[in-house]
Image 1 (cartoon, helix red, strand yellow):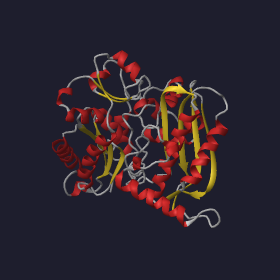
Image 2: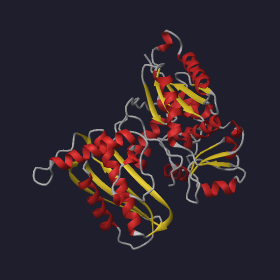
Image 3: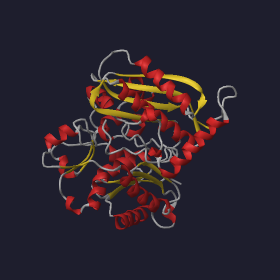
Image 4: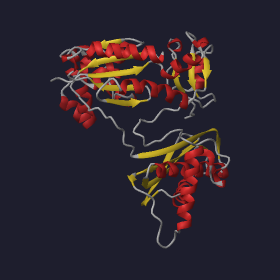
Length: 404
């Protein structure tokens, strides 16, 4: 039995959510993202794209390209609610699905042709989502995830496409290599220098040539160009690390401000670990200077989720990393090598009193929110809370209001 994979993508998702909340924004050029000079476009309406605007672009540049656009800061919590509504509809309609991002889904419809018809079923599912949520959505249907994703891109906006079995290679051939998943800017530049601009040319290259030039990645690109790559659906996303970053509106060398931000990050991430019964075995700190040079430093530690261990370590890593005496643009904290387990008190240094304190603090946060209780050394930091459980199996959401 051949596989049948459905890929669904909510069109300009953040923009569509904002238009549902305010119908006056319909058919008007709209940008969602950071409002400051360092803001990034998280989503843009189709009306702005003819001016050259695209997601990931600096908001400052986007405003210059399309000065008549309405700019909205956006709210991650609101978008998650809309996303969850769509997720529930898909969850109760298909046997197995993967939520690849806040607005992107895969579903395995293999075998459904015997009973209903995969394309007909996918079409009715799309119509149900449109009717119940009001959000425009497109889909692609083929034998694997890669071809289905490309088909969705070709079907947009608010449309659908099916690639019949055996026609995958023919469908991909005339398209630009930029439309192939895993071909980023760097890979595209290298392939373009080789004279490869369409997938047809990529299909005709020997596999050995791509493997010698790109290694294992070259084999993946070649397989996807042939329509043969078949990555599995991942129903649950196991987080191997959690992190938090902050880009300042203005580069700073204020050590108190920098340490306050780092302490707030370290404390919040430690709470996220304890809430999910997780511990970290590796801590890293990241610095980006005003000249965009980025440095990181990490340290392996015995597994823990305790503030009084992690916060001093974050401070130590920051002070050993900050050597250039230059203005800082961004700082970040990352906990990796995550395993399941409760924090155990140290026989010689900890006490039941300290353990009781953590339990009481976390109980208050669980009831009243992440920012209901925080250390005095973290006061003054901008909101650091994640607004959700990073270990719930869902993919991370791109925060529309986050400045990068």
